Length: 100
View 1 (cartoon, helix red, strand yellow):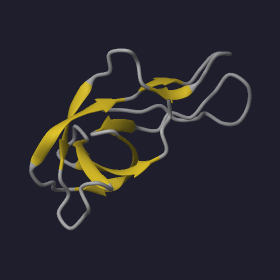
View 2 (cartoon, rainbow, N blue to C red; view 1 turned 120 degrees about the vertical axis):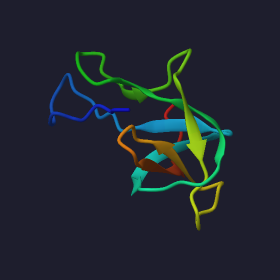
View 3 (cartoon, rainbow, N blue to C red; view 1 turned 90 degrees about the horizontal axis):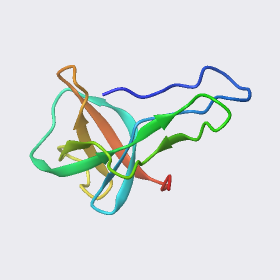
View 4 (tube, rainbow, N blue to C red; view 1 turned 90 degrees about the vertical axis):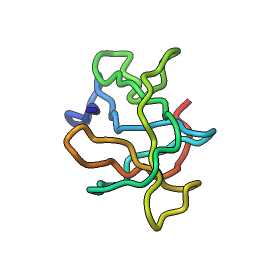
């Protein structure tokens, strides 16, 4: 899993942080952890449009990729989930504002 990053201020660039939608909420990356709990479903992964005049940053396409979502020990399931980072760890995702 990868996200886009802002190459600096100026026209033609936008920020693309990793964002997922899960169970009616929008979750933004808020760190990493080496372990996660039980798998609780599938989260929709955002895409990135970070270059060109029409750069909009992170957005959800019509048919987003799905990634497993996991509980995080000691965290409220309604506020924090985890997704696999692809390198043997997990990205912590905290509920935040919608990007739609």
